[in-house]
Length: 294
Image (tube, rainbow, N blue to C red; front, side, top):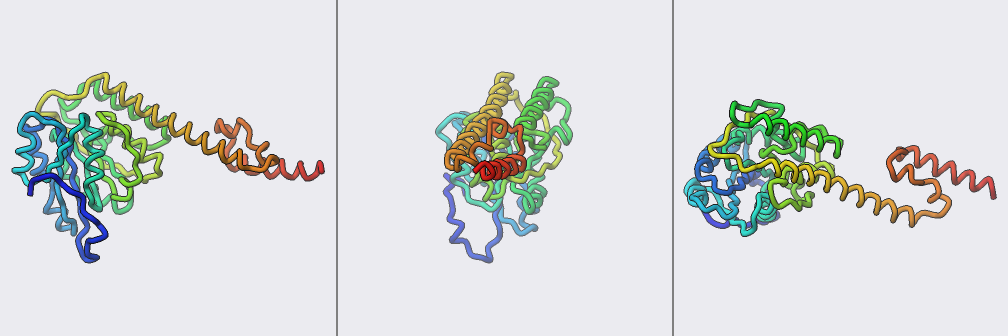
């Protein structure tokens, strides 16, 4: 069953075929935990729900036995040539074809046994995230600095994107296939989750959360304080890019408007101090005044 995974043409799938679930596990030197993560995937529970499951390990230049263990456990192996978790996941998203994709870290800190519940939530939502901050963090799983950092980054993301998500940096995500196709990801490293969060919000995906238990790693954490600043910078960059893009589109629309209507949309509308409904009514009033003057 091991080997390089290839995309499958969904259009060729018979109508009576079961829906499919892909469990995607990005790894880098996770030989101590990858076997446990694969074993914990609830293939039987998902099968009872009428879902066929395939486990994919996308590995980025591991120098230990992660790849060999993954193949022995029956996972499909995707080899990523570029460095970074973000690059690995972007490659996997392009190759994997499934109705539902569940992404989970390979360090055995996230409960992949929640996969069946995630898929159930995906029946009514585009994206599901497993929230550590709404659930339980086991002793030793996070330092006080980590908890504060994750909380601040989540608050920052919520303020920037007006999204009610309680854990922006979680490593447990579920996606409908259509949602993945909408995402335009650019993150190459550990800012992946921030990029996913921002893209899901900006692309209008409906997001659900489930509280989870977060466990301690089997080895030393890979994230450092500087990665937190990179994640915050990624969130800010995505927001500013969206604002610039929106302003550009508004400028094009204004340029194409007749002069009388164009006057009504002033700097206040562009800055967001006038609601769209108020702008529309003001445009009508200005047109009426122009007619009276004539």
